[in-house]
Every structure is written in structure tokens, then in C-alpha cells.
Image (cartoon, rainbow, N blue to C red; front, side, top):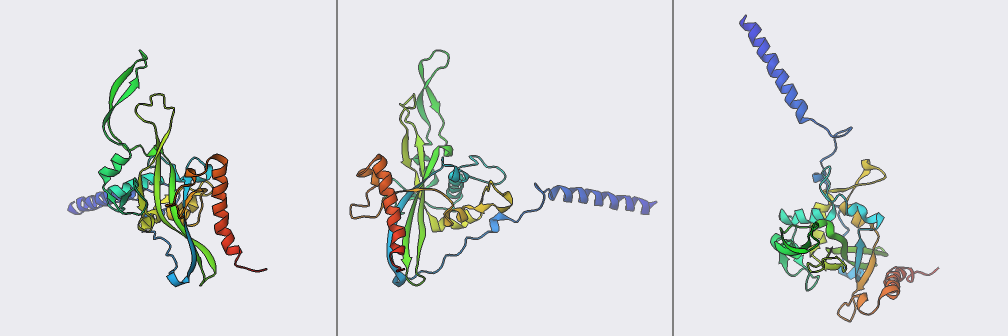
Length: 284
């Protein structure tokens, strides 16, 4: 009789253990995927100063409203362990994995920012705003709690340096920094007629590569072959336009001396100048 009770107890333990094991092995999909956190960024080739015979810094804008750039904007909230680029950077700053740098005065990564300062730069402070009462149509004061509205980041500025490596006889590029640009309306602009833009903070790209490589971007053509943020940026799988080049005039923006169609043509001229440099070195 005792042996029967022991056997029943052992079987019960096995059933409980099996049920716990089954719960622990839930796979959200057809197969178990590799841990993305273990991915490492692709190492860049060593570059000697003596091998650089020409270089130029440029600043370009990635507009997230363009269809090719939308994988960097969506999802606006965490989904299937995926983040969009700005939320990933914000979480990295909050967790201490990344250092944010002040974007008000320059883009040379001089002044580090705390997470509270990043929130302040986003305008995430508790304040009183004028809102229209839907019943009476009158403007009334409303206290709005401060929160980071990451969905307002519609553009990214990329600081990069193009260089010609005489050792390999190739034109290459290295991304130096990345900066979210927030679009918002002032509190007094109740009817939201004039959109405002501000650079929120700068991230030193080489420092962020490990975090970017460990998080994937949705691939609309084949989700079994999702790329990482590091792959998207290194392989230039985005569309952008140049807004500034290093120059003698304090690296002034194109918008300071040209506008509209002329500014677009100037952006194309700078881009063609970079690519033509390599082509002009060869004789056919």
C-alpha cells in the first residue's frame, strides 16, 4: 500500500513538473528564435590617418514620413519585443547604456545630459495649457502632466564623414552622431497653425552601435530576415537629404543662404560632389 502511495506521489510530481516545463517553453511563433540581445555590431575596418587623402563632414535629414524610412518610426509603442529608433535611444539613456549630449549649442558631444534633462528637452514638464472646452467653445486652463511624446519625433539628423581611403582606393562613410528632431506646437498656438522643430539631443553613434545591433527592425518583405538598426544605418537602407556641409562659414546650414528649390539643388550638388570625387580619380 505504501509503495502505491509513493508511486502516485512520484507521478503527481512528474505531472506538475511537466506542466511547469510546458508553460516555460511557450514559443510565440513556429520556431524558437535566437536571443537578439547576443547580437554584436559588425566590426569596422581599421583606418589610418595617413591613408585618408580626402574627407568631408556632412549633416543629413532622415524624414520618417517617407515610406522607406517608416521601419525606423514604427512601432510607436513596444510590440513583439520591437521598438522604434527614438524609443530605443530613450530607453538606452534611461538605463544608462547611452549618453545623451546637449544639442542646443553644438553637435560636438561636449555637454552630457541626464535623463531628466532629456525629458525637459522634449518639453515633458508639467504645465498649464489653454484648451478649448468642447461644450462651451471657450478656452480654459488645463494642467497637463509632463511625458515624453516620442511619436512627435518625425525626423533624425545624421552627422557623418565621407573619406577616400587610398589604401583600398574606395570612398567610405562613417556615421558620427544621430539626433532626433521633434515637431510640436507652442502652447499659445491653440489652433496648431505653425509647426515648430527642435533638435532634442545627440547620441555618439559608435557608443550606440552595440544597443542598435541587439534590436531588430521589421522587414515588410520577409519577417524571417529582419535587420537590426545597426544594419539599416550601416548599409544605408534609408532615404535622406543633405542640409549642411563643413565649410569656412562656421559650417552654416544650406537654409541660411538658400531656400526652396535652390536649397534642394544645393543639397544634390554637395552629394554629387562627394561621389564625383572618386570617379574623377580614374581614367578610362
